[in-house]
Image (cartoon, rainbow, N blue to C red; front, side):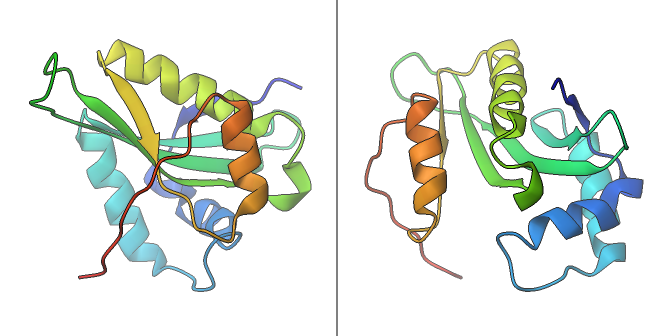
Length: 145
């Protein structure tokens, strides 16, 4: 099935929050999320992607792409992909692959040198999926502020 890939809009906040529950135990403040989505929309270096089931209009997946500048090597920017989520009932149906095709299309349009993502240690199934997409596992560090 071909899913619709589009930029999220503030009216998608509740549906995206439902998707995020796959990776997060907490619900987001919906009004705050609406403001965040509007802020993301206004920034040309950020892309909150919504994957939509064309048959019923359900937002079944989402991810956030952020382009940031780099001063190393060619000086081309880097694409960071975060919050990659697909509703469990849609996993294995091509949603994730199509989301990455879209964000990588956008990353190339933004002249990104490469893309990177961070994934929780416990998301073993997602790690296998990322490897099938061509990602290499490298060591990273995270510190909460």
